[in-house]
Picture 1 (cartoon, rainbow, N blue to C red):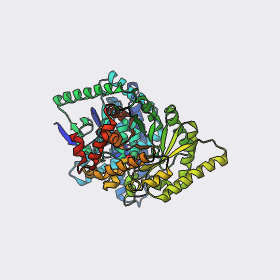
Picture 2 (picture 1 turned 120 degrees about the horizontal axis):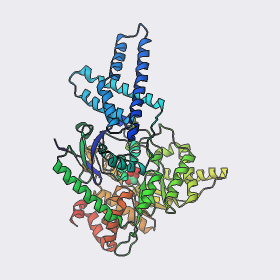
Picture 3 (picture 1 turned 90 degrees about the vertical axis):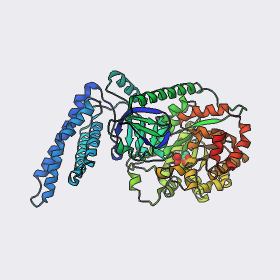
Picture 4 (picture 1 turned 180 degrees about the vertical axis):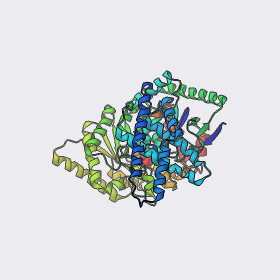
Length: 588
Ligand code: PEP
Ligand code: MG
């Protein structure tokens, strides 16, 4: 029966596909399609791993000391029984043979199916067997890892999508897939970035949570904050993800399906139309040039940035190089190579590398957030505070960026500064990094130094920042969070997260005006920059540099081309001075 679930619209467009439910703890399992002729090998891989685990448990059981508690032997019996469970075995075969999932994906998918049944059981004893099944699956996964994978996952990147297309044509059983999860960490999102999903939905998250930001950068329809979506949607259900309205439609009727397929086509046509603006310079009707730059998470994202006509990278979120590596941080050489790749990718256009912004909803490791013992991570040791707390780590990054700057135009951007002491320490460490490279005789290049204005305190002492920095960049995602005391990742207060709040707009307007008065470049690199409903207002406030996901650039460019910036000035002042700027924006 058709039903809908409401959440927050975070990435535009319509996706229609079958649901793949992924538990947060299973997000690191590889997801890829295998060729039809390899299915038997893949089934065999699971069988061998299952046999190995059976042998291992049988051995443990045989060698149990006499004095071992009886419960332990009984527990091992249960696990041995689960290993032979017909539903587990036949389910895994189904996902591999009929859907061409790789072995690990098939196993975890079938686990989710059975786990759901356990959850629904009345009998508490039986309900608790889910934990045993989880352990068994975990062991099989480990055994498969140890045995190595005879089937290679397809190459990362665009090729994988193309491969999915091929599969769709080749085999009508292969259908588009949408990812449904309770939560996905930004690090895991990155993994899905090169994967085969055409849309995704999560129970938690706010519009500017980092998970939503990565979804936007993937340019696939997404809904977050859909509360109990991962409970209500079942593995393999047909789901429509309406990323414009923030709605999920589960098990749609043929009429609804047809309606959304039509909308999907309309969206594609709109994209094709916008695509024609790729090479058009972003100049307003009154001749003002506007720089539209790209936000990226990984060096490979520069491909999309150049393709869409970005005139540079305004924000490279370097922390994505640091996440999901079990604490083993990238060394200087690895970072240098990554920054160089981004610089080379932009083909002579400027690249703004932000120093690492770890913490809060971007933990170093996948489970970091849940394990975070800090009382309030958003107000704790994140971004520049984290970097200054570990000078050797920070110096490593600074040296890598300075070295990469020898190969192109690089701006170095520092997140979350609020104190003069932090500014001084940062500048001193940059000097120190240069001195270290001098001592070693290693080449490096010049960088322009910028600060993110994302804490109200920084916006209120902007004159101090202007003295120390070559340029400023407004991080409106955090500026809104900290001005309004709203956790940007918390869907329960998402309705209060308001980019148009008069206090937020006042801080944005004053920062832009101060920079203009001192002839200092200023940009907005938060999600506000890519929101077409804000473009005219920001132009009216004097902003001439916007940094956003490549997928948003053409729509914003269209707004710029239609705007008369000089005429917008007085109107923008009226809007920000009103009690209800959002209403004024809608009215005009
Ligand atoms: C911001 O806060 O607006 C910003 C661009 O940084 P991030 O979203 O990575 O915190
Ligand atoms: Mg920020």
